[in-house]
View 1: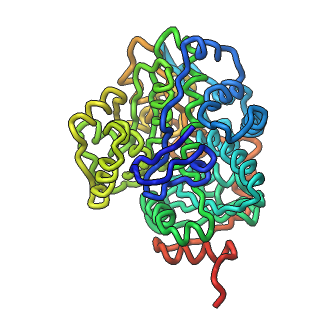
View 2: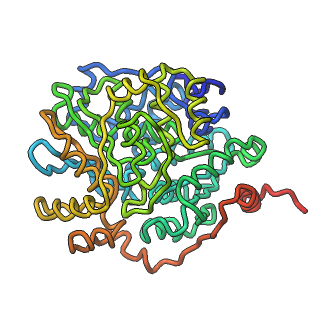
View 3: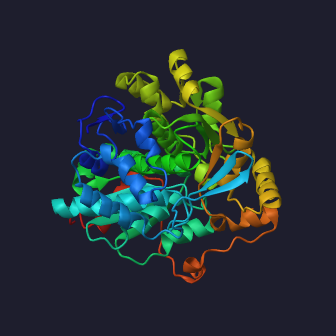
Length: 465
C-alpha cells in the first residue's frame, strides 16, 4: 500500500512513513494511491461482529506490511479498551428512519477519540521498533487537542504540543487539555482563532530545518491514519441498519472536513451510501462552497459550536484531489489561491463534488431550538455540534435510513445545553473532579518564531547560547 500527496510533488510513502510524516513535504496531504474495496459479501460478513473486529477488517488493507495481523489486532484492542460503552459507537433511534450515532463514549467524550486512541498505539509500536522519539504538534478547535493529549501523555517516545485558540474553546475542552500533569504534554493557548493555529502548524511543517530538527509529527486530521480510523464507524453503523442490502445516508457536523471525508472513503470502498450530508454552523464555508462553487474565506465568528469555527477546512483538499482527477498541480494551484482569500472550483470538479455530497447549515438560534426540540421529543440531550447535524439531517430525510453523527458529549458544552433546554449535562463519574484539577497552560502569541523557540527549548533541541 502506497501513499501519495494531493499536490503531486512529494515522496511516495508506506503507511508507516505517511503516518509518522503527517503533512507531505510539498504542503499536500497523503492519500492512498488506490482505495481498497470490499465486496458485498465481505460487508455483509461484518454483521454481528465486535467493533474491534470490524475495525480490523476495514483498516487492514490500508496498513500494508507495517504491522502483522497479530500486532494490528492488539493495537486495536488497546485503542478501544478505555471506551465507556461496549458497543463503542452505539446507535440510538431519534425518529422514523433517523438514527443518532453516539461517538462520545471515548476517554475525552468526543469522536476524535476513535482516531487518536488508535494513533497513540500505532505510534507507540512504530517508534519503539525504530528506537526514535518524535515531537507532535497539533492544532485544535477544541476536541482534537484533548484526545491527542489523552492518547500520548506519559509516553517516553513523544513530546506533545497542542495549540488552541485562547478564549475560544469551552471550559471543559480547555480543562481536558490543561489539567494532565504528565511532563511530556504542553497546552499552548494561542492568540487568534483555530485557522491561525492551523496555519502556524502548517508553517512549522513547511520549515524543513525545524521539522527535521525536532522530528515533527502531526496528529491533526492532516494525518491519514486519523481519517482511516473514522472510516470504521460508517461500516459498523451501516451494517447494523441493513447494509449492504440497502443504502444508508449520513449527516456529519463538520468544520475541517475529515469526518465526512472518511464517509466518502467508506463509499469508495464499496459501502452503499445514499447521501453524505455536510452540516455546518454559521461559519458555513463548506455549505457556501457547495452552493456557489466558490471557496472564499469570510472570517470566523465565535459560536456555541466552537469545534466548527473554521474557514480553512484542511481535508477538503483531499476531496478536491479526486474532484480534479487526482491532478496534484491543479490542487496546488487552488491552495496557492487560497492564500489570497479563496478560489473558484471548475465546473467539472463541482459536478463531481455534488455527486458525492450535499449540505446544509444551522444558525445559532436554529441550533439552540434543535437542542430544545430533541430533548422535548426524544429525551436526548445533544451537544451543539450534534444538534446542527440533527437539524440539517431532518431537512434531508428520504427513503434510506439517515444516521446523524453525534460528535461530542453534551457535558463538554454545559452552558449552551443549559440555555437551550434547561437541563444540566453532567460529566461522567470518571471526570467528576475535572474542575478541581490544577491547570498547566502557556499563553503564546500568534508568532511562528516564538512558537518554534518554545518547542526547541522544551524538547531540549535549542542551541545553547
